[in-house]
Length: 280
Ligand SMILES: [Fe+2]
Image (cartoon, helix red, strand yellow):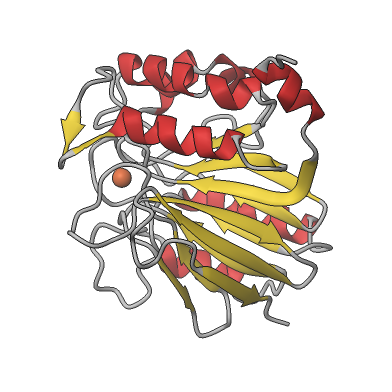
């Protein structure tokens, strides 16, 4: 019997604790564009196909910024919107954050549902996503398009502190495009790292801070036990070895299990599983 993809999607069981994490998709208007030896559109099509073929449908897809190729052109977002269609057809909610290669107004113009949805802060792409075992706080660190460092700003930080206090019943997972600058040596990172950590360290419900930006994969912890998860890009890497791909996150009651999926199945990190216990 022939089954349409939509029918398959509708019958596929949902894993409400599984989240797909993408970062740094860098989609250009030109589908054929190659940067650093890879085609970003082909990579994105490959990872979305993989996600659509998972035996169980994940709860949602979350993309942590640098959606657009370089300067957030209208044409980049038009191609990006088209590339999201397989995920939409598979009935997967897609949540988007912005990076320094995005342009907020052009993004909102292109993605109408992102424009019309009511956001906690009207002028930033911010959201709280409520899952059974955690609340995701998606923040907006796009300061100036094409300027490498990012910033949350006082208003967003003040909102975050209040929102965390009002939602302390579940683990909180923070998603920001920019990496933290905890030792002060990373000039292109999050400028207001110190102010952010003054808010999240004492609020023990904060268990993890997930980010992209560096096009690198790593899992570390800060001194207070917050997990620092650097998501790999679906697009290009800046070195010769970092994995390119995505992460499947499974939320447990007191931990999160990450599985790295590399586009290159022969990559030594492909399939690596990391169990992250929540701090008390
Ligand atoms: Fe990037």
